[in-house]
Amino acid sequence: WSAEGAAERQRTHTAVLEALAKHLPPCARPATSPFAFPGSGRSLSALVSALHGAGEPRATTRTGGAAGPAPTLVLVPGAGLGRLAAEIQARGYAVQACEAGSVMSAVGALLHSLPPTKSYLLHPFVHDQANRRQPLDHARAVVVPDVAPASLLPSGSKWSTVVADFVDEYARPEHAAAWDALVS
Image (cartoon, rainbow, N blue to C red; front, top):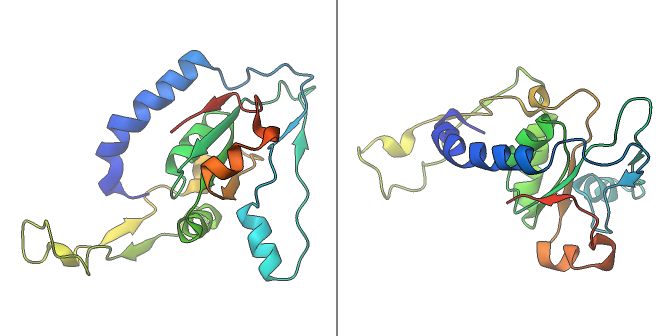
């Protein structure tokens, strides 16, 4: 989620996004096909709600119809902070990001909740002086995010992050043949 990652995203994300669009358009599901994000994994919002004493949120089910066909379901395992997942969702897909790291998922959720004009100045290299070309490289600042996640996502789109081990969660029977694509 920084400008420093732009070149790497260009090399990797572009090919993935082009292949996804070529092989599976965003609205590949029939208009009458109801869906919710499958599975019983605990979403990040459920974990936060549990911390505050609230009940488990209900699954959201959307159907195609007057507004058009239901979007294609894409699963993104190892989603990290969710940049690739957000770029996929920005193209009209319904995306569930799966990340086993609760801290990584929490930071990703924080980024997704930021107002479009909010950014932070971080010093991610301050404790790691290895592999630097100049003595002060470890003090270099990074602005995060370079693009507000909220500005990427279409109006009304739902963001889903599951905090779980990919193999444990998605080996469950309810996930069998439930996803249109897995992007990693």
